[in-house]
Length: 108
Image (cartoon, rainbow, N blue to C red; front, top):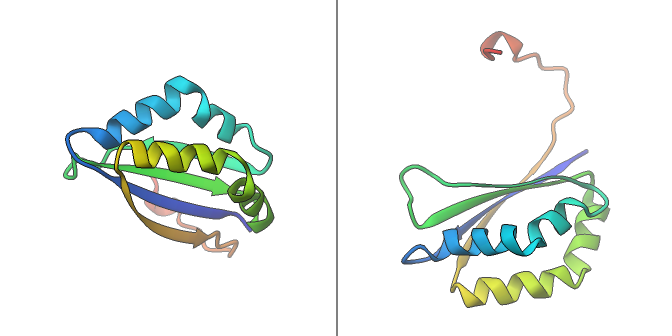
């Protein structure tokens, strides 16, 4: 049962994008991607909200996410959020392993 967390980082004057640039250039994002249990760690930029960045962060299970949250990496992240004065909203999803087949609606 995978867990996906959508984090919306909101800032001003381009600060959210600068945060992403520092996360990527510094290697912090890659270090998180390399953590055991991480399935996805990708940033996206909403078309209509130029001061917002969406992070889609997926983990194999709650244990992997808990280990990530307890890691020293979280202190580094908190400092960067403060540096760029970012505010967050969070959505959390648990994978649905049902037998629903949506393939008829997906163009490959």
